Length: 257
Ligand SMILES: O=C1O[C@H](COP(=O)(O)O)[C@@H](O)[C@H](O)[C@H]1O
Image 1: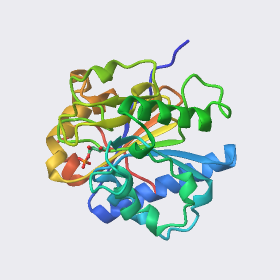
Image 2: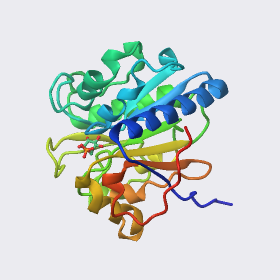
Image 3: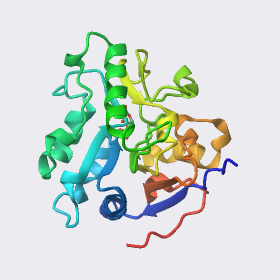
Image 4: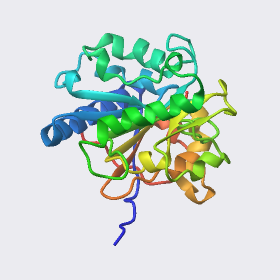
């Protein structure tokens, strides 16, 4: 019998440092559990403001970077060294500062495909290669997916009102009409996001307060970020700072370091 998703767990922190420290603590714990169980840690990571919030991972003890397999939750279709590239952002903010083998970072490189559909298919194949032989599920089960939320409620490259919100079969999809530039993007789909063992949103700043109130207090409005509801036994976590959480009525849980 299908089980309903468990309710989101919301943490809020008074400073950006406390937020980053808690996110790093959470990631170390998730990594430890995953490596103990399966010998690897599969993570999908977003761009935008998120990579900077991961700075407390730099130099943190207990991280086994060689066991990480990193994918992108979404990527803008631009060269990997372009200022808009989520990969470049993650490299600049985190991966260039930690001893992760570059082969463990699965980029979405437009120079390797003739068009966006081929690029999207190639990334799906890369996921199938990583997951399908090791897990028997219909969709990959990431140990952790790290997401941000835009001021319009989008997450990854899943935008309000876009037909991709109802994609049910593909693991990876492309869009050519993103309302936020650049227009061409590749994204993981909801079936992948909602099969993860853990999904954690990280957001900060007063500029996100209104949209977070809608996302968390009015999920029935169906904003893209509200549609992230990992199926049991998966869990959904929200890591916010107090400015971002200031209008949210959804109950907060104290974070135990
Ligand atoms: O375009 C994107 O935006 C979202 C949200 O970004 P933020 O800067 O408002 O945090 C991000 O999560 C996504 O990866 C990115 O491609």
